[in-house]
Image: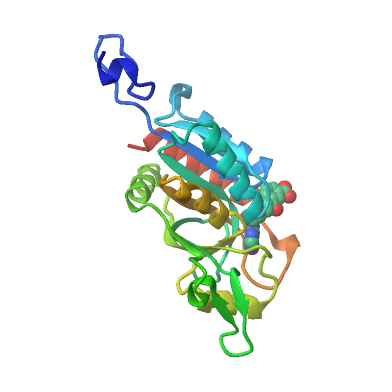
Length: 246
Ligand SMILES: O=C(O)c1cccc(C(=O)CC[C@H]2O[C@@H](n3cnc4c(=O)[nH]cnc43)[C@H](O)[C@@H]2O)c1
């Protein structure tokens, strides 16, 4: 028995009897159902309902703890057979870095509030500086290139930059400035990426984060959030990925 005969991920025989390469398996983890449904609408928009990858999408709950626990459970149920995990959803955009409606693909995923406040400037020490591990997971470079290429093929662009994870969304200009200083170049803020990334990284599975910007990171103004616009951008991004990923 060959590997192709015995391995469940080795691909299925085509009509001509030759073997198609197996589609990559991608787990998409959102916070809420509205985000998951936008992702699923995008994937369902692939021509013939046949996406170029095998996707599963789950709504894992808001915040890094729920995201980590739900991701770990989904990975365990699938015996960790995913090729990529994507933390996805709407997100805040840092002013001057990412506008409302734009897409941000993480080059690294950084927990910006995992550490200790200090009375001295800048007012915060990360767990890395405290010597308790790391508040950073690097996004998978090779997968990012494939995702960016897929977006580009559909005429979409994404800012490639750090995405921060926080347990409390930024609500003042001072916190926005502090978080931008702590993570230079950060373009987006969400509440789940580091949890998703930690679960994936502990199983050795490549991970990245994709945010569609719904609001500016800064003084809290919920009425100004453009959730519909961001969900449409998220849907378009996953349609592009489902059609064009190679
Ligand atoms: O009310 C709705 O219809 C609705 C639809 C989709 C998503 C939501 C959320 O409130 C999701 C919360 C989710 O959004 C992320 N997020 C968005 N902007 C920020 C931000 O500026 N700072 C931090 N997180 C942000 C976050 O990941 C939350 O889980 C509502």
